Amino acid sequence: MNKILELMASHTSVRKFKNEVVPDDLLNSILDAARQASTSSNVQAYSIIVIKDQEKKVKLAELCGNQVWVEKCPVFLTICPDLRRLEKVAQRQGYEFQDRSIEMFIVATVDAALVAQNILTGAESCGLGGVMIGGIRNSSDDVSKLLGLP
Image (cartoon, rainbow, N blue to C red; front, top):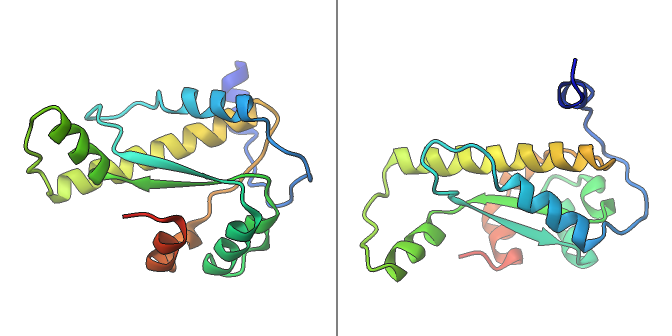
């Protein structure tokens, strides 16, 4: 088995974190590499919100169903399907964005999942751990307000 397959096979969800800062250059390298995720439409219809502010992490932990590891992690990433960003890019290029179909919703959701998986794999390859937090969807309106999402 090669090193990448070994890394993938060794994955575990981590919910207990060291009290250490993830350096910005390392985080940016992981995010830059993760954005190379294979997509079916090559639109990268997602946004990544980086949260380091402790007060926001505490509130997010509550909104995610009182998951204490959300507030204890050094950095929390929220990955959102994002058609609004794609629409703005199209408008900036002089195109009218008319495709608000279920297909585009699926494309955005799949793109977000692919980049999220790449982020976690990239983090693990650097000796970091993490866990996907499905509970972020429990209070999407409140999360949106907290993070200033449209």
